[in-house]
Length: 376
Ligand SMILES: Nc1ncnc2c1ncn2[C@@H]1O[C@H](COP(=O)(O)OP(=O)(O)OP(=O)(O)O)[C@@H](O)[C@H]1O
Image (cartoon, rainbow, N blue to C red; front, side, top):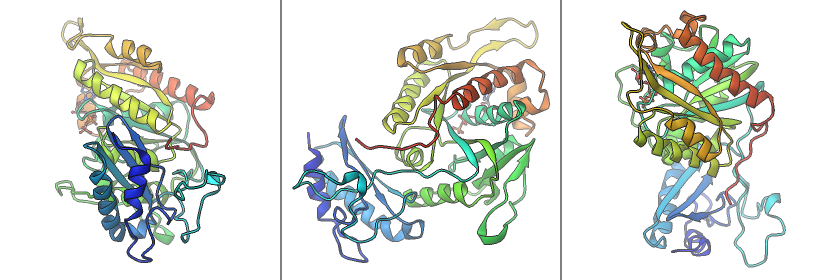
């Protein structure tokens, strides 16, 4: 297995096109993590450099791959921390690093959003488990608790919030390129889906993902919010890791179905957030039980209790189970989410219960207020 030093040595040969300086000496490189047959690092850029620096990212990935001994190499561009100026920009956190070690970069750190108290992610290890439905209803559940809530649709490969909230039209541009979020049942909503035609296939490359998410986080008039819910893209790959790293997350909610396969993916989701030192607020089991609309009988189609058991095993809270329910699907498809449509109904109660637990964790200080992501 390759070592961190070997990777750093290989990366030292990668040069920045503008200045010609070495990537390692430039102070833009994050720490290099070598673990479990994976080599991971990120390169700090200004959002405007995304295209120009994609070449550097590729070159760095190739250089690392050449010494990676078959390990997967994950190189990402991050545009969420100040780009260090000049070759001597050794960050304060690395002052006192032992001699002979290459000048190393600042710890990636996602800055908070002014006025927004807590940013939380809703994520899933794989697609189709009901992550977006849960994110939408969780946001409305938090709103029902009297909180000021926003939702950011970061699922840029398949934005669902316009449909879930029944919102159409483009956000207004306020002064200085700032976008005004749309209002969905009292929740401030922003989605890339407002900016593109519904049928337009979205093909995103790494750096574009970063600048889109950065823009949606920081160039939107969120105002004062207690909670900003971020609907993450499904999965635990490169894009998700970058996003988790670039978003100032106080914590993450993982959505899973009871099927074994989804639980394995959920475990991966938990592991990804743990690796980036983002607290797991808990696991939601979606489509847990089926209540027959005709006879009212409850059946456990995919088995039952798996997510609760898994949460206990992983040492993370279990937030609750949402039944497989036609009303949830129909109201979601119609853009009239059940938590807003029928706030006193049984489904809304479930989502409100989950929201209460999430808020308890946030307000009770079990989540981070000033998140910091450390690559060690
Ligand atoms: N508890 C539920 N009961 C019934 N239908 C549900 C439930 N949760 C989600 N669905 C339905 O399942 C489908 C997938 O849900 P959703 O789009 O929220 O999943 P996702 O995990 O966000 O998927 P994607 O991978 O597309 O991001 C939708 O049609 C939704 O209405």
